[in-house]
Length: 82
Image 1 (cartoon, helix red, strand yellow):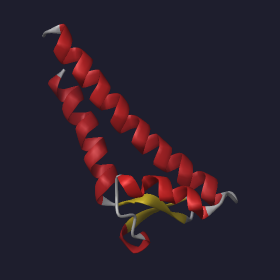
Image 2 (cartoon, helix red, strand yellow):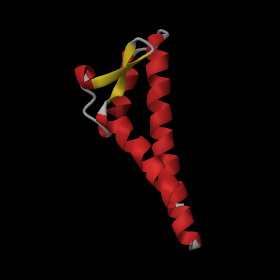
Image 3 (spheres, one colour):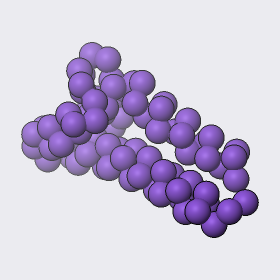
Image 4 (cartoon, helix red, strand yellow):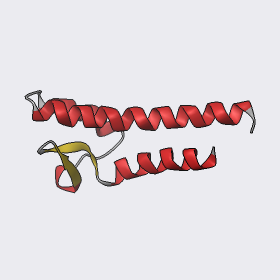
């Protein structure tokens, strides 16, 4: 496999993992007293409608249920490709 392909795969995986981690951290912070305004940062990537989202730590995640599945699927596809 070419070096360029590995670099692109690593970048895609890193971005997807960062978004998933940041949304989980945001849900955890809101559950422990942080302002719910932090959810606004994720509006660029997702509509963030609370009734369509997954609940984590007793509060809805800032992403809808479909978005974490897309990012996790991207990570799985890159892992399978490599």
